[in-house]
Amino acid sequence: MMYVRRAGNGQGAPRKMDSPTQSTEVSTHQPPMLFAFADALRRRAMRSARLRIVIETVERRDPSVQSFSLILFVILALAFSIAPMLNSITSRMNKDYDLWQRTGWIVSHGQSIYPTDPNRLFPFMYPPPAAIMLAPIAELPRPLFVASLLILQTASWAFCIYASVRLSTGRFQGVHPAIYLAPSLMVIPFVSDMYLLGQPAVLLLALSLGSFLALRRSMPLVSGFLLATAAAIKAYPVILLGYFVYRKQTRATAAAIAGIAFYLTVFPLTYRSTDQVGQDLSLWARGMLFKYDDRSIGQRPDRAFSYKNQSLQATVHRLSRPVLADGENDRSWYVNLANLDFRRSNYLMMASIIAIGCFTMWAWWGGGWPGRSREDAINSEQSMSLMLTVMLAPLSFNYSYVWLIFPLTFLLAVALDDRRPARCRASAAWTVIATVALLACTLLNTRVAAAYGNIFFAGFAAFVGIGFWERRGTFMRSEVEHESAERKRHTLSIARPMGSHTHTTSRPNQPQA
Image (cartoon, rainbow, N blue to C red; front, side):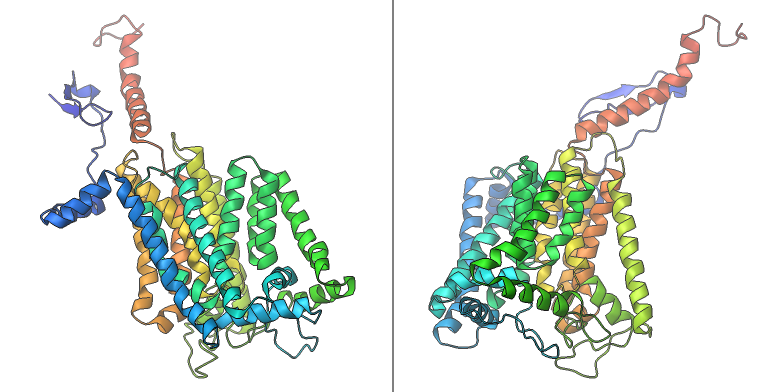
């Protein structure tokens, strides 16, 4: 006699097989090693009375946990705002905040945004519309100017959390408490840099996620306009336009193109003359889009290929040819693993881009397994699109990988969803672990780890992990659907040999007519 557990929720009583000929291999659903280890840690932690209260509160998703997350968010935002506010009050150098205010003042007084001398570096590297956006608040007192940008930074971060949770789970209330802030805490050094430096990477992510959210709500014109706004502030989000084209979002694509044209030609007329608009665009394109050689990308000759730039372009060059890994501070430090010249490094870079593009198409064109939900496929594609944008941008400094917030939120939502198969949850969890482990290499030695591209490879790990499982359809909505598909397959495999006896009246030992 053989026994097999009834397919379904795994709780049914054993069912006796009538004959050995009817037996078939049925998968045993044992918890993966990762979950077994996590369960062992949980049991050990439950021995402490205080930890047991915390664990039980989180597991039953008590509203107080969500309130604690909100309080922690406010505390972090205030803590990150202290340094730039103190610098603005005491008139100390305040990173990029001073540059933003000076650029806005230049625009409001009709002066040239970019140097006309081709041998001079640009203090302000962003597109002309970004400078126009700074003009209305440039005349504010320095502390108020900085406070305005800090409020915008905090609102952008809050929206990134909201949109990431909403896109990943379909709702914002009632999800696992870890999904709210854990992804941000995993990249918290980059979030802190946004406040300290005044960089707009979080704002760009908020606009991109808002574009995805509008697309889900059948508002393609709003989606395209939000993407155009992000591209007008800093050019690299325009890469996301490729996702719109691939998904045949014609109206969103048209709205994005029209929005970019508006920001480049009409929007600057609020502060600039027609001649100045043309000159600004020409100077910026010449200095940023069309400046690339063996020493520089755009306007940062000593920083473009340094450890601070975690783009695919910089990482390939830094590791494949002798280029300074920290040209601003150390003129003798190299980390190249090969000795290619500039031309061959470019060939290697192009081959890498083609390989990533082929992998993307391979992942997106996969049919997946039965039961994979449409929302999971969309989340996978949009997570990969965000990572593609950051990796392929020519200048993608360390803090740009704050864009990992959405992919990590999606992966955590999968890993913590107990309705899914254990193997699917473990796959997502391992991807999160690999990504965070690569980011954590920075703790050992910031410069050395970044020089070898640990931050780039962290984003690449998330990109590849999601891509493989998007192809395989691992992110399935529920275990019931998985079990149903497995049960149907085993039923068919059993029915085939039995059918030959069912549809004939002859005995097994007699030849059939």
